[in-house]
Length: 93
Image 1 (cartoon, one colour):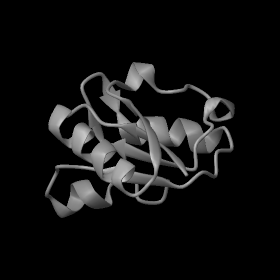
Image 2 (tube, helix red, strand yellow; image 1 turned 90 degrees about the vertical axis):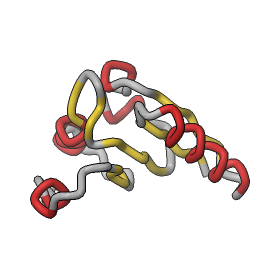
Image 3 (tube, rainbow, N blue to C red; image 1 turned 30 degrees about the vertical axis):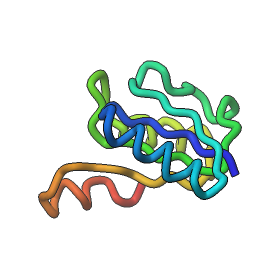
Image 4 (cartoon, rainbow, N blue to C red; image 1 turned 180 degrees about the vertical axis):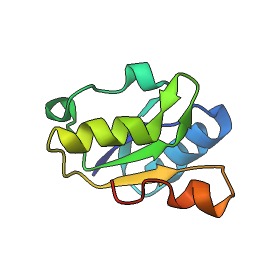
């Protein structure tokens, strides 16, 4: 399994990579919205761990772009936001 991590927090990104590696899962870690593949065809992963709040963009916007281009790959959203409205925002994407 090969996972794409898009997370700007250094500690969390490092911890995610280490936990995945311990389970025998390879990963690529990106820290900015701008570094993420723009189109679904460029995603050669089994899953994406995607932060909602990136320093240069919103993970939900990236998710919407990928879904509108036909991407059906599983995407797990990560957020530090604690409000119910934040966690449920655009949950139908």
